[in-house]
Length: 321
Length: 239
Image (cartoon, rainbow over all chains, first blue to last red; front, top):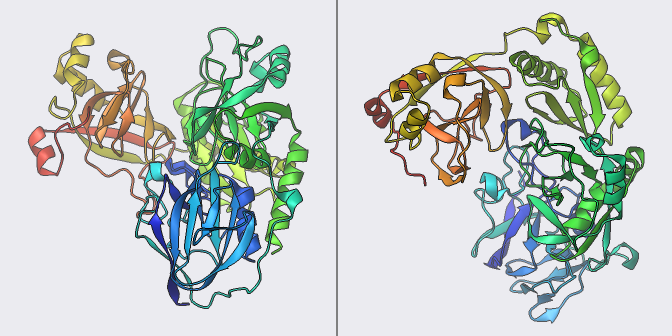
């Protein structure tokens, strides 16, 4: 077995810094949540900048709050929300890789409005953490993954493989691939589940409405609320308020009795009894994860073959590196 | 029960997810059919199968869309279920019986006495009725190892609490309408608590992590407070 070497120590764990990878797959039948990076687009880019495979373990830094000290020279990459990252007090460019020396302090000053909510910090060859049930992803609610099932804490030391290559040059994500998290977002909805319970007219109205991200949004689910009082609220016929509990896919759009949609994210519960009108595309999930409270959200319809084709292309692209 | 695969509906829900619907109503037969279907699908070790989550009337499947698209997966599942022998579909073989010791006592279950009073029964009658029956595991979810068991005798059905508790103690045995369940960990919850079970029902170090499979049978065996405390049980420490 390759030797591991301590390379990064957590100086300040901020709001919530979580070790994440692709998620814990195949455990839903026991009631466990999958977890996984909230924004897989950004986390995949962070790994790609270092030539890592996209399932390498990264740190997900909520609202760009946290500080780390480098113990051994290494290559790092940051992507996702703009947390105003600095090395020894000097700004570093987001969506890029850089070289770090022993003793360097990597600090994040936080995300300004419209600049996203999750920063990703990747390291060459990925953090070496003992996986639980096939994944390192931290699901705090299940006390599972990460280090002893919890978020990172001050003093935690993270290791990489001793033989990991360090590069002498820095890479940047080309500008056209960098999302602007301050723009209004139209989520791609793949209609499914109970969408046929809603009338054609009310679905039509739904697509013309605008919502905003509520403050009650986290890794479990993003709650949307109406920007203003609008007509044509999506409502179930008669007195139907629930359905028989069933498995919930990532990105499922639940419509509770009050008509305010809830979109289920990586740490969602496995079963639910609210009616759902379908799922948003994987691409939309990454975009939504970065929207702060108040961000403007609408929905547009996408066909399953189109969404599936884009998902395949996305994965092929990131499995190239 | 004869099994009619033509009643099954398969519907896509996302790029990587689909639902198999077996029925529109909850029944014990459907729970058995779903448990057996899950076992049968798993036994075929499909490379594209990522996640399989059974519930009361459906199975959710996550598949690897990089290997197969929706049409190919749904076709494979349909023919798999069509070929599933009736003897497998309705067999009670995998529906193993799990016996769980339970302490029904006011010191461990805050709702036991008020519930009995509301039901116009004595505490002993509630215990006798609840422990007399074999329940069927209809779904696992809400929390790791939380098994929804059905159905509760109509004499002891209880509504959920108007205000859920912030903390329900680990092992709590609750009733909500026709369902009963044990909380495997401390957690928030609104079911009325009538007892406690000290058996570990979820451990990520174990294989399997939870003793339950959809379709299994569960029976509760009453134990005294003394036995319960001796076996490591705690008095109620929830809200």
